[in-house]
Length: 130
Image (cartoon, rainbow, N blue to C red; front, side, top):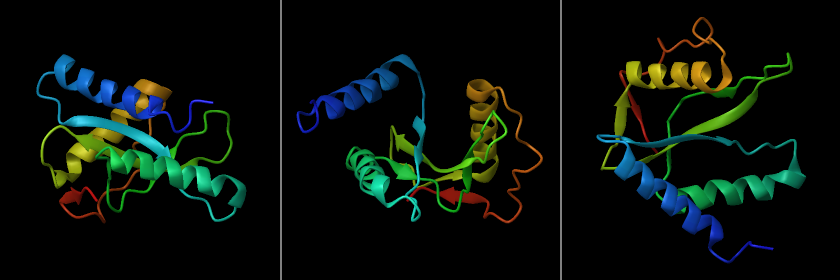
């Protein structure tokens, strides 16, 4: 009903603008988004459209980060992209900062401590935004 009427774009732009004004010295807005799934062809188009929507609004994915949405009910975690719309020109973030961001998301939003399985040793010192 609202698709194609810029409602989503307007709301997302409003959210980004509010974030810039309300959170001083913020690097940007970070969010999770479902990855494309080759096993679910019926939902694939919607997922790809969603990813393209956020990319059109400046979102970049964290390169080589295997981000999992924790399943708090004992099921299988879902593969996600961790994305960011930076407030200024940022091409990469320190690996330690990315680890802290993920840990804080898991703890604050999901009340889930995910430190032992999240290994970052194999990652470069800086994580590129692509």
